[in-house]
Length: 235
Image (cartoon, rainbow, N blue to C red; front, side):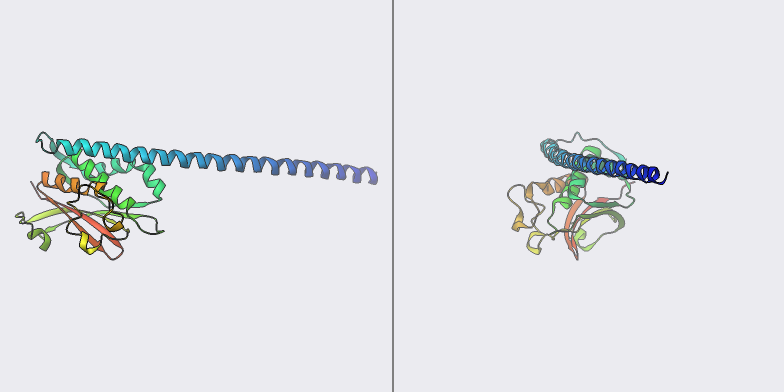
């Protein structure tokens, strides 16, 4: 009886070892399939990100060609919804860059939804693609309302109050000598190799703000740079 028990235990151990080996083999195959799937997903995201950028560039060309016309419809719009839609459209690019984007509550303003969509696309894309070494992009979008600032007064503005939308990024900064001309560049390679491309649409953003009787400013921050777009407060 004891021998029979030992033989039974032995056989069961053999079966357990066999099952364990099969599980190890299956796990390796699954890990390989998961790795291949992740690689495929990464390639799909990269392709989608490139397609998104190409679509944005085409939209920018279209918007730029229409800026001379006055047939844009201006209506009071919730900027929170517009930014949310932009971020959804740029999801693959944001994921590819492994970026963190936070958006504080934004006001409702009378704007052209078409133009403001293009504005936010370029400001966010610029913050995503600005060089920041090995740091993952951290972008903060916020707003404030206040009286004229010194740089706004220097531009000859007359309104008493403005809504300012600030897009801050942790990139390498703009370089002091670029602050005055970065918004007027319309073609060419990155300025001083600092990650800011003229083709990123900053000049277009400036023109869009002019259409809204507002203006735009570039600033260096302690840990990056910021673009500020100012809209006059209207009833």
